[in-house]
Length: 84
Image (tube, rainbow, N blue to C red; front, side, top):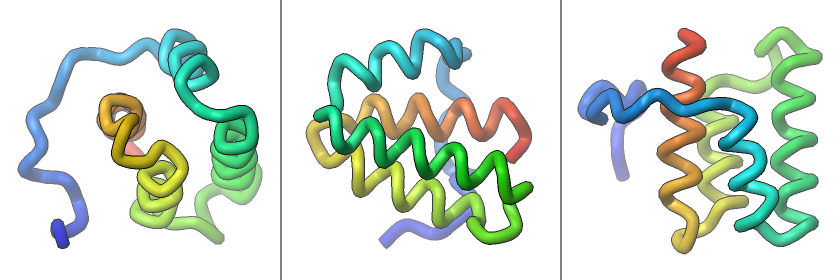
């Protein structure tokens, strides 16, 4: 199991948020994409108080699955870029 923080991850290329969500919609099953959107909405609406960064990353990892690790890494890069 990897430690939190992601300090060992290379910065990766800049990810455009709109392009990321388009790609996620294409790759994920409809239900998984909707669950991911609900997770993001909770994160935004609750001002990050009920959900930690690690929890949202864990939820994304679960929803994206092993076959979509590229999406997971792009999402992690988006969070890092936003300073979250």
